[in-house]
Length: 596
Image (tube, rainbow, N blue to C red; front, side, top):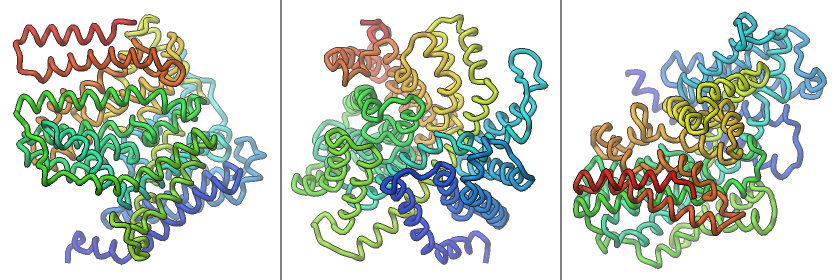
């Protein structure tokens, strides 16, 4: 029997352990919210320790990967537990390594962190982190302004590994105390009927319209994506329903894949959850989560509105039909299934905005409500067995996602730690300003290019963290307010989902549609023109993010940008005379970027 045929058998044999481990991870992260203050050097290493088996054991493929994964897992667990059991003593050392054992623990933690990130998301992010580590070790030998004075090895490695900085810094704290909670909420919602509720609501709202299947995809992806926070997960889930439905109604395969890829990419920018990026933004900016959610709302709506306009233009171009009456959900079914996401969301928002509790505490209450709903199906039939099956599914998915985000954020924390220690971030900021000639728009374009290039190989959150760390201060020195600068960088970090040569959402959608990925990418870039334009439009029209403080001005800016985006979409999709399309394109750009 071949190894490939034995692997599934092995996974089935150990599979019952993973729901249990997932429940342990869920219990630990929820307990942190209800149990009060837990020292960082205890909570954060346990967070990493709980993530290690998902990456090194469950994620291992092949005999060599499994054997080496077991070694990394055991070493990583031992190093994390050393930090936990010696937290009080280590906190008194102020980041200076005293013994050979502590040096071994520090090196082990850094190596395991790099390998964990490599196995989770590939080489680019750990390679950036490794380069930063080497810069910190040998940067004193670099002549000129880009060198640094150097650090004692015990102080340098200790600051990154045995104190509340480096891999145990505030960014990891966000992963432990906020991001993980919302990942659990999304996993519990997805395990129940909430996904079907999103699809039904979208089908009722848009199925009767021209090109209805594509518009259903946009609405369902906007709703589902707000809890999944992952373009790839969104494509894989909603796309399994929407792409075949679009093809059945006459959508060209490239267009069907493009609609789903573009719609799914908006999940990370759509409130109320916005994936992990919003909570990282809270930590990096110091701005409250509700304020970030309010600032992100109108730009996110603009993104999906642009995709909707594009689908409508394509529907007229190809004479695409509405969804058949027999295939549309009945209003009664919509009302029932909508409760499975409406109740947890209502509790989440009411507790945050009326109750005044923290987002993570409100999310815990929403998780409890969503967990109770796992007992029921869409006919409100109670089943304890169904609850157990769904809870197991939610536990495994939460464990996987928490581990994935932990691998990204802990590795990115190395980059931030080294940049802070060496002052390299300030030097890169000065370099950006020098190349841009202290001018805003050249600096914006340089930052956008860096985000696109880095985002092509690094997940959105990691690309955002690295780019905003080095480019954010430059944008702020040029007069852009911090939240606007962070939103600008975050949006451009998302471009990799639909922009060749590396476009994850497009690859998945193309496979599901059975079409060449380049054709799908071409249609996706036209449909997703908002992803390229809206971040720049936010800079030219900053009022659009001031919905909470100045709603009138925000809505005026919203309408202005919406008209501009309609003109841009029409120029790229409508089959009219070329001079008229060129006029629409130029007019759209002028209206979009002309300040009010």
